[in-house]
Amino acid sequence: MSTEVHVPTLGESVTEASVMRWFKQPGESVAADEPLVELETDKVTIEVPAPVAGALGDIAADEGAEVEVGALLCTIAEGAGATPAPKESPKAEAPKEETPKPAAAPEPAPAPSAAPAFARNETLSPAVAKMVADNNLDPAKIPATGPKGNITKEDVQKALAGGSAAPAPKPAAAPAPLTAKPATPTYEPAPDRPFDPRGEERVKMPKLRKMIATRLKEAQNTAAMLTTFNEIDMTALMELRAGYKEKFEKKHGVKLGFMGFFVKAAVAALKELPAVNAEIYGDEIIYKNYYDIGIAVGTPSGLVVPVLRDADQKSFAEIEGGIADFGRRARDGKLALAEMMGGTFTITNGGVFGSLMSTPILNPPQSGILGMHKVQKRPICDASGEIVVGNMMYVAHSYDHRIIDGREAVTFLVRIKEMIEDPSRLLIDV
Image (cartoon, rainbow, N blue to C red; front, side, top):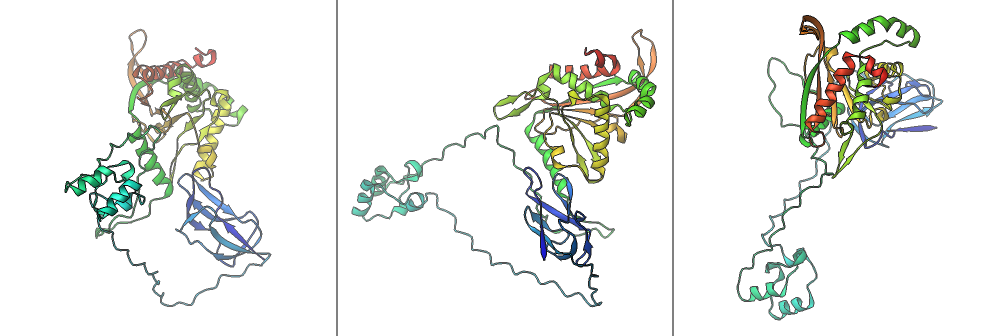
């Protein structure tokens, strides 16, 4: 008995995937739930397991193929033992037979300035039809000015009088509603180009990279994006972390980092400034009374943003544990699609790669993103005016100026600064 393996449902709005690699070859034995093939979508990479035990039969989608949800991937001969894949005798590879392309259909002739009457509306009104018939006129040669391209009595009278009735002017295009999405960039194969003799490598752009490029460009095209900056003295937070990190890890089994404090500070600031946690939807503003914080994670395949749900209800240990788990599974390609959907605000930490300052790009449809950076010692003036060495971090808040004013954006970042420089404020909620 043979069992078919199809492309599973990939998640909301995801309809196709690329076949990245097969873990088994035809004839090899497979166990139930053993990974068969790796698929890449524009959001995540997933492994398709074997539904039954047996031997892998025919592969219907080779590596690199584009497959839609429900498409056949392979078959499995249930209960069959492993048989070695047949070895082909060494011989010259026969040239692949290309599927003949259908002859291109001839391009239609350009339409005349005034479309034929029957192309516009195949039914003439009784009065117009009588005038046309009585005068032996060709409706195709009568410019129409009536609604929906209809020929009116006046059009027929002008044609009889020898006048050149111009086609009715087209109404001006209505402005696109705010809900309309910008045109999605397409990545069609570029015309062939000569390779540099010093050596080049051409690879197909992965779906995840295409999606990253599309979403980042969408943010630039749609939002009125602006960035405000500030700097934070991390000394108090670093001392607090140094004093408790061993006890914290021993009790909770997870390291105490900086991100948990920034998540807590961001949630507190978002509660004070709800516009930063909102989004534009058509001609409405949606204010969200929940706080799902996206945590940007860099992976070898590209940037992903898993979402920490209900961050306002989580403890430091739950936040740090969730972030550590996201990082591990993102690098292994094990994140579920649902974990990267939604989100009301995003935090990205370029400091882990050594970035001193940057302007993060919005994660649409969100209206704000916080950028953390490298901690660096710099001379600063303390409250008494003395020059001291501070552990300074530049922070950036990019925001959509259509919904967030400069006052709100700057205030948001100042609240982050105040709570990080004095972490006790997070405990007493001030």
